[in-house]
Amino acid sequence: MTDAVKGPAGYFPSIEKKYGRPVAEWKELIRSSPLTRHMELVGWLKAEHGLGHGHANALVAHTLAEDRGR
Image 1 (cartoon, helix red, strand yellow):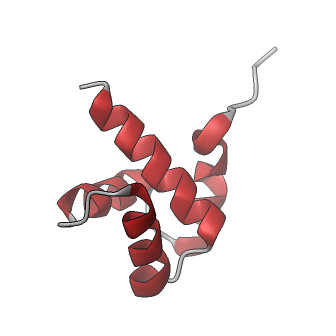
Image 2 (image 1 turned 90 degrees about the horizontal axis):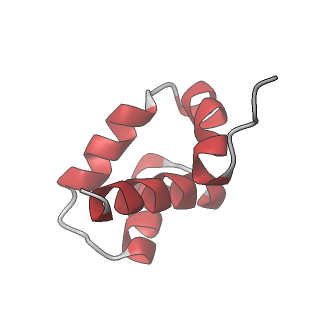
């Protein structure tokens, strides 16, 4: 039995399907942005790339958490 993915990563399949880009590409966009604060990045993804709030929030949360773990 496989456990369901929880947390922000649970949004990744629907993000890839809806917006047509792999999650890795979204993460690189986030990392290359001059913005650093969570809500600034969420707003930027929504305004510049047309993401919904939940999808943008999930991508930013996961990316920033990964970067803190490096």
